[in-house]
Amino acid sequence: MQAATIEQSQIATINGVALHTADETLSADELRQRACSELLRQAAIAKGLLSADDASATDGVLSENASSAIEVLLEQSLAIPEPSEEACRRHHAAHQATYSTGERVNVRHILFAVTQGVDVVALRNRAETTLLDVRCHDGKNAEDTFAKAAGTMSNCPSGAEGGHLGWLVASDCAPEFAKELFGHVEVGVLPRLVHSRFGLHVVEVLEREVGQEQTFDAVRGAVAMSLRQKTYVTALRQYLQLLAGEARVEGVDLEASDTPLVQ
Image (cartoon, rainbow, N blue to C red):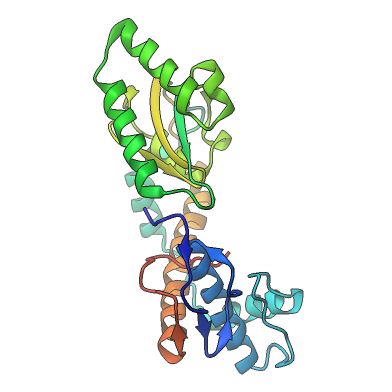
């Protein structure tokens, strides 16, 4: 996982345009996101879709005109073919659990929140030590160990309840958290830390209720949308790489992330 924050020793720029102020501390991901947004803003200007007078923003917030121009730019620049019937059927067959309905999990967790300025290496060490500790107990001791750890270390309000989140469905969770919980058969303390936008989680699945698999015809639209999104992400990544290769990029490592970070 990337370090949560980095102290910029120089002003990061795209073609000489500053991405932040001299006294600002950003995470590596935040800096890359600003760089990607600025690459697209400048591309929109070059294509005549945005006035050259549009002001760059060192706070990372694009103007309304820039956001609209970037949307048009991407519509013009990215070729997103419709997925074939065969590709959709293959995807559905390989990810049937993803398209099931009604799956629920009874979960508790211990959250080690990643906040601005936190030492992520130390945070990860604490999380991994806690994960090892709760996995090394069983029976009643496991219950006591997990609940005590949640009560003393979790940065989630659920810590006061022993870390219990109760019964959840996928829509209750952040997508990256749901991906680790649903469509699996694991019960018990997961043998890995779960990463989410909130931080690092030690997670225990107490119970599972299996969902009902849906036929391909019932979820055809969702499958096609998923494949279109994957194609879009790949095309956007390649387009950003092209723009970065043509730009003068200073103070930011755009190769450190394998997915585009613009929203």
